[in-house]
Image 1 (cartoon, rainbow over the protein chains, first blue to last red):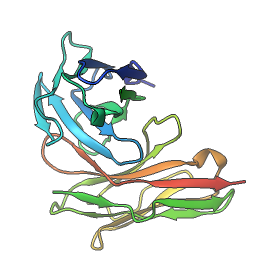
Image 2: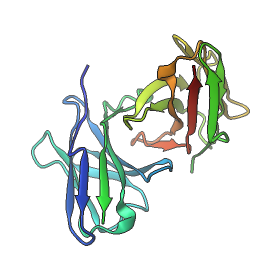
Image 3: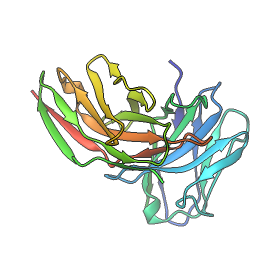
Length: 114
Length: 115
């Protein structure tokens, strides 16, 4: 069964540093997403991406965040200047865009900011 | 804006028994989808079951079934013949209208299965 692949599985970074979280969505999917889950809390929507542009973003997704699909296969989330409160599990997901089909989620990247 | 509420932070069940996890939601839309996702200790998000709001029939997937009450905006998950592998965090989620298919999640219910 096709998978969404995320790398790395765990990233430790110093506060103020930039990090890039990488995702390879399922190849025939059209919509891509990033979600965040702070430890012990619910999963929160960050951003959706379609047709090479952001289609929706949450209030969490401020100027320190950016996404891009640089080469037609990878989908990245960049956090420009990490803060302690950015420590969380970050999930990439993709979907065909057929409403109600749900997503395929990746295994997540655990980001720890120290 | 959609909201999803899971009022049970933790639940436990004996192996082979049945357990029901509760979920309520709020939406102004008439057409939407609801999901239950399972998150085991590996933190992977796994789709368990989906329900289309315009369908009155409750969805079933093997040992998993839902009780969907549209008027009450309630969407509970029933796990029959619970197995040790069912132990996980369970999230209820709503997919609204629009073109972005964004999911709104509840806070989750941690299910423990006792042998």
